[in-house]
Length: 173
Image (cartoon, rainbow, N blue to C red; front, side, top):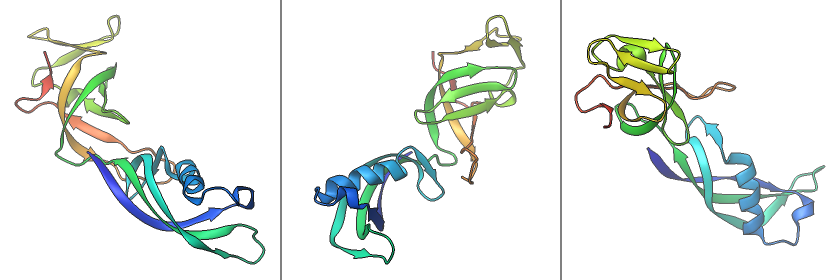
């Protein structure tokens, strides 16, 4: 799910940016600091949309920069448990399907793809149903449900676990 968050904070404006428009500099610095980063409360921040910076700043002894209060909006991708998502299979192996959900990939374990047993065909790079011969391969469009989202910890990416074993879910044909 995509969300827009309004965030408040403090931004450090280095001396080399003095004399330039404050809001433009703030946008540049906020994008460098937040864009394309995982945040434990905000999810994956895709972009900084706007920023409003206080004209008055504070100078800290020993640092030539000014510190300003700032309010800004960010667009984030926040996957939610039980959410229905559409995606494209970006990879297949003997573990399952990797589904591109836009900014992140999710994993559908082989046991969560179908009710029938599946076999991995390394020559085709596909999972094939034993009875129906249904094929799951790279590029297929699928509909899945999020069943687990790992919390963001330092140094570890967010992991999204999906299922397609419920009615109306699976490969879109």
